[in-house]
Amino acid sequence: MPLPLIIGAVLAGGAIGTAVTVRRLRQPAKIILLGESRSGKTTLLNTWQGKWDEPVTRTHPAGEFIGKIRLDTGKKILWIDKPLTFRNVTDFSGLDEIMDASRDNVTAAQYILYLVKAPHLEADEAAPGESEAYERLVADVTRVKLYSNRIRRVIFVVTFTDKDSRYDLLGTAAYQARVRGQLSDLISQLDRREETRVVAGSLATLESAQLLAGEVVKAML
Image (cartoon, rainbow, N blue to C red; front, top):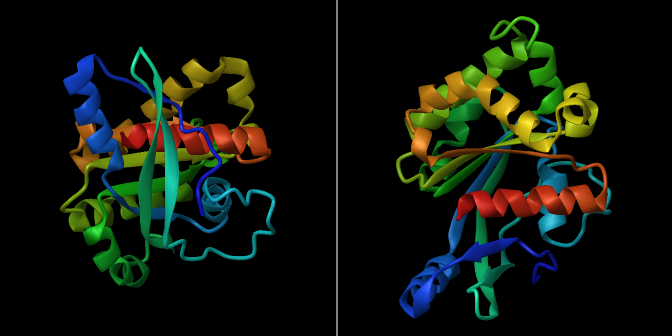
């Protein structure tokens, strides 16, 4: 199903630069979507597929669908079709047997999207690194690093910002910096700082979910 979502703008200069950018954007993206239960994986997938308001029952495989990316060359607007192929959608819990069962899908993926609940980060701020939720993140990241051989990007997607009191207090930019700081040890642990991105948002409304879904794909480019 074609994505009805505008995925942001990418700027390119000159005819050669535009041609290279278009070719790169058209390349299929093999993705694995990870995170604990009820972290928003299915809602994020539904948003990309134009089905945000469908009931969420359980995480499900998404297969392949086409995303449309808006490319502003400075002279005209181009719309690029980008195949998004989801290797799997997995509830991660830090348990060896669950992580090991996902090994092949993690190994084959080019992009890892790892969902983190914002309220967990807010609770963890009082005693950094000591919460059960953070310990689970450390365990998951350890396996991700072990299995990810072909990764172009690791993207931490902080969800449920509408349930984190710091979001409205700090504003979007400052909040983004705050949660990236909280995840900095995990990013260092991955040893992929240049390839790692952090985005944050809410899935509570169609508008906020579309904004977050767009930011995730932009972080992949």
